[in-house]
Image (tube, rainbow, N blue to C red; front, side, top):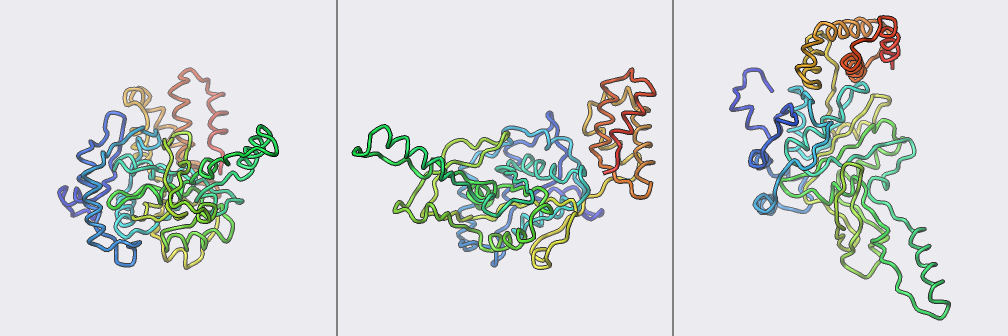
Length: 367
């Protein structure tokens, strides 16, 4: 945000980049006011809805839905968003384009997704962690065909060869993935948050595979499309911190988003991406602070103020040691390594100098 903007102008943003804490969370009314500032999508990103239809559905959803932060993920708390991060998140919300977040490990890339979802009360973030073997289908849905066949086999054993069985519903063995859930849950004026974590670990084809679905805004589930039933209930995406409850209805085997989700993709810059992929993304680079005060500001957001105040000088000494190390050539350290060192300092005030140095050398190992 330009420095010459007034607080009133800044407050017109959708996402403001609030630094959240357990005692400082946005109110539901405040969240609704900021979500109402999401404009209709560009004509080339409508996904089947005209601007008028989008506006009507957005107003209807805003009147019906209760926005709220729900279960607070600790990763949303204490995150300090840069002005560049705030600007680009808002641009992604308006343009309906994915945001590629690049930076070193431990620089807070994933925390941004949790902070946005918490501040605006959006569904998610639905996290899809990428490894070298990940395929596009893994993010869309998973179908346990073997489990269903085993269930059918057990039923046949119970009734014998001449008996009749009712085959178990396909939907009981099909679960939406993180991307599938984000597409389904996104509604006009209230997009879900999808976190595609460490996309640079994917195989060479993944970025191009994602391009197609990002442009089309829908995908087919063949196992459901071939059924005669129009509506099939399937299992929702589920993670340790995000249990989405009851079943979800899929119509005619297709998942179509009415609103493009807020897609945040993180990269540790381990590889380059195709130009066509980058052209369709907004790009944010998250860098670590390079001053003592910059790192101390992060500590103030992450730790209890009284505890940190009692160890002000030792904490600053750790920061200076951290800065001294990262100034060396070929040494890479992440902010979370400093946080780990300060946490140990707070917990073990009687650590000997010899043990302290050993712990520092261990924690501050170059990445």
